Length: 282
Image 1 (cartoon, helix red, strand yellow):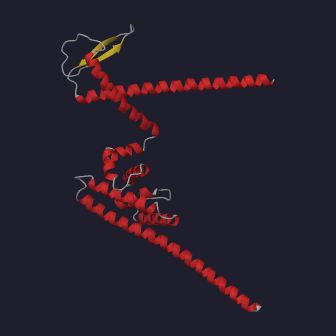
Image 2 (image 1 turned 90 degrees about the vertical axis):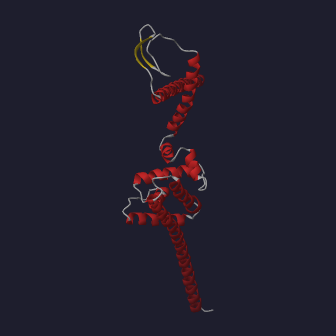
Image 3 (image 1 turned 120 degrees about the vertical axis):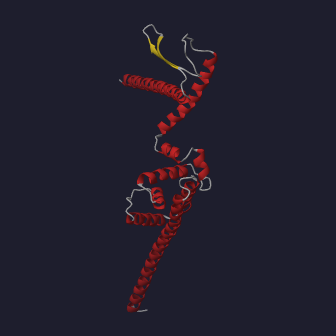
C-alpha cells in the first residue's frame, strides 16, 4: 500500500470514527430527552387527575391528594432516582422550561421534588414547598408509594409532617420530650388527687377542677389571691401542657449546666496535665 493510499484510508477511518462518536452522543442525548419526555407525560396525567380531584373530591376527602402525592413519590423514587445523570439533568431542564413558560418561578437550585409538586398541582410556591417537604420526608423514611397514604394518616396528616420537616432536630426532640412529660404530669395529678400536695379551706369552689391563683410570699409559702371554678377542659389541658413544658425546660437547663460543669472540669484537667508535662520537661 503506497503512502497516498494509506493517507486516504486513515482519513476515511478517522471520519468514520468521528461519525460513530457523534452518533453515540446523539443517541445518548435522544435517550435522555425521551426519558424526560416520558416522565413529563406521566406528570401531565397526574395534573389532569389533580384538576378532577379539585373539582370533585377536594372539599370532601384527602384520599385524592394522598393518591396524587403517592404517584409523585413513585415517579421520583422509581424513575428519576434510578435514571442516569444525563437523564436526571434532561428532566430537570424540561421541567424548568415548562414551569417558566407557565410563569412559575423556579431556579436551578429548586429541588426536583418541589418542581414535581408545582408541575402536578399548579400551585403557589408555599403550597408546593409544603408538599415537597412531605415527599422528602417519605423518601428519607423509605416509604413506598403503596404505603404513602397510610403513613401520612399515621403521622397525623400533611400539615403535621410539614411542621416536623421544617423544625430542627433539637426542636423535634424537645417536642417529643414535652409529649412524654405531659403523660408524666397527668400521672402525677392522678396521684395527688389521692394524696394532695396541700389542702386549703375555700368555700364556693365547684366543678371537677378549679384554679387557685397563688402568689409566693417571703415566708416561703403562697397566698391565694384568686379563684376560678368550673374551668373548661381546654384550660385544664393547657395548664397540663404548660406544666409539662416547664418540666422539660428544667430538665434541659440541668443538662446544659451538667454539660458546662463537665466541660470545665475536662478543660481544667487537660490544663493541669499540660502544666505537669511542661514542668517535667523544664
